[in-house]
Amino acid sequence: MLLIRGQAGGTALTGTLYERDDQPPSYRGAPDESAPFTWICDGFYEVESGGQVQQVGDRELRIAFEEPLPKGFEDRDQAIAAAKEHLRTQFARLGVAETDVDIEILEADEAE
Image (tube, rainbow, N blue to C red; front, top):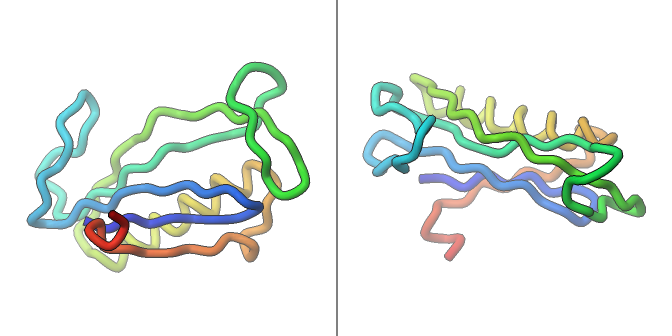
């Protein structure tokens, strides 16, 4: 299992890449076991009211989160590339340039 984290503007978003031998989570909408690699990560976007207040760089934003949607992949490199793109897209929704997002990949046991 890999944790893939995007960081920018003093905040971060982390998703999980489940690999072939990992025990996937069990909840409604969890990945099915037919895909060798499954990426799961929240999505978020800015809202005018409600949401969670978050400091991103020098801006205070209200952020709403979307339910994570698992995505399956046949190839590990393809799954990692999609994970990186997902993280960059979430920050772009907040006005953060793609080049300002730092991506870190950790084995799950390294993050503990």
